[in-house]
Length: 193
Image (cartoon, rainbow, N blue to C red):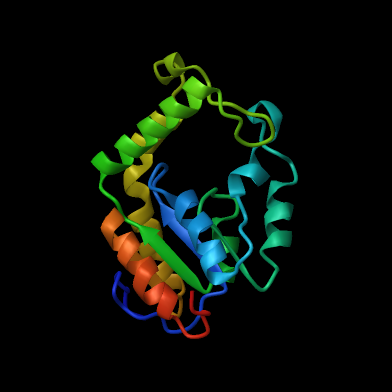
């Protein structure tokens, strides 16, 4: 299956969609937008992974196994423990291949906003104080910077392992908008809006 772009028609109506990309690339935002557009349940992996006080939930892998056994869903492609499971069950992968400058601007803006407002995220968690950027090697901003280049090789490996899986590569916010307005709405079986 060739790599698809923002204007290429989808071969079928997707029912199990993964959104891949660097931390801060907009995976969650895109997944949340696709869910109502295609009438798919939305699975938020961060909510399944993070328990109170940012503690990983012991039931995470089993929870992901259970919710992705359903015939339809959209979620992010992340967390090494479940990445293969998700990829094996997906019928479409959308790759947000955005540049580092854009991703960093988005993740910094989001992190500052969440920290400043003390926004509750998953299971009562809030962003740590901004000063932890300097002390925590796994701070989300540092994580986004250091792992930015990891998605491309993962997508390439998945395409070798699952050549039947359609992969849509989107390289800018405008390509995301074009794809949502065009191929997604025109996919076979998608009700008109």
